[in-house]
Image (cartoon, rainbow, N blue to C red; front, side, top):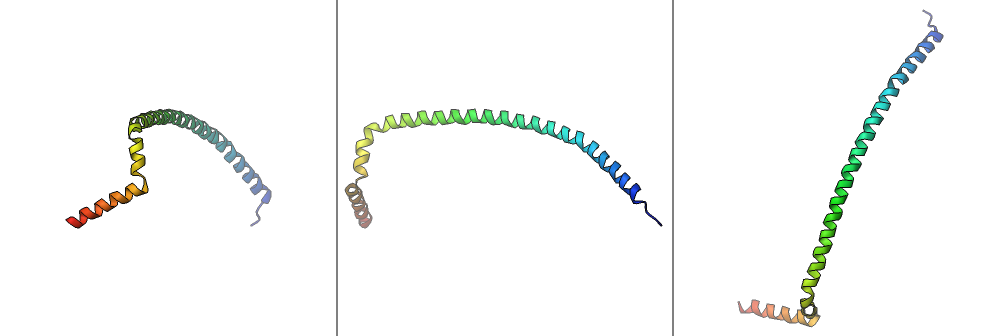
Length: 100
């Protein structure tokens, strides 16, 4: 049984061309679908980014308001953070524990 290698090569060429002809439009269809989905995702990301930036701005305003509200207590907090004041408060706490 003699195989005609030329005929096998021709058939492989035909099959390869058909595979390329079928895959070309499929790849184009997939590319179009992918680009549409990418645009939708990009629009969703822009909307979310706007929401996040609005939330960040609200947080900045709240922090600024909190800072203004805490200004009268700033000096007191400074004194309470002093090491001597901390030691004094710890001493009172130890005494209170011993009394119980």
